[in-house]
Amino acid sequence: MKSILAGAMLGICGLSSVVLADPWRAKAALEPGAPAACRQADVSKLVFDFTETGTELSGKTTGGHDFRAPVAADGSVSTTIMVPVGAKEFVVDLVGNARSRELQVFNKEYSCRFNLSPIQ
Image 1 (cartoon, rainbow, N blue to C red):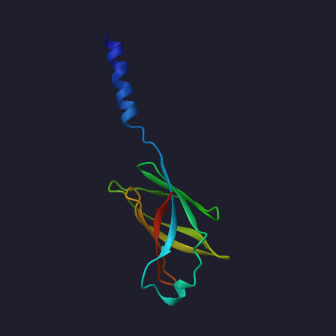
Image 2: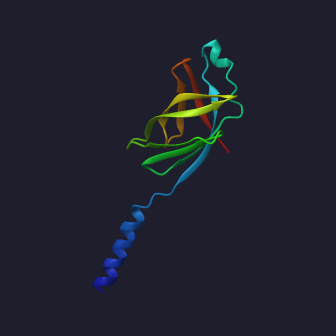
Image 3: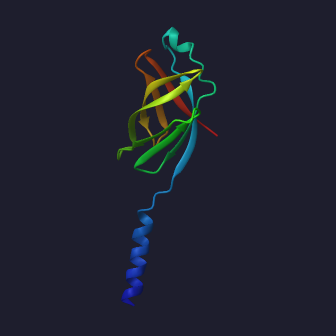
């Protein structure tokens, strides 16, 4: 009887620590009021594939750049990634909240900020 109870407790504890991946896709949209140079960026084909597992946000851009970032207890995330825009690639900061899916990418060089909107 003790072994059955112990096995049941291990099963319950084991299940509670399992975090299922939560995948989604997002497209970039230029934030209103952005500098003129930012409006020239063609992000129409830029798509982000994200997976959030509770403690980590992993992703891949249309151009095939993989990235991973730790997710804080409150869901916040901040990392630097490469993104393809047209024929060029840019370094951007990916910031926001992975759990609420409110993310942005920001290019410091041109002061361009893009909101990442989940798509179906």
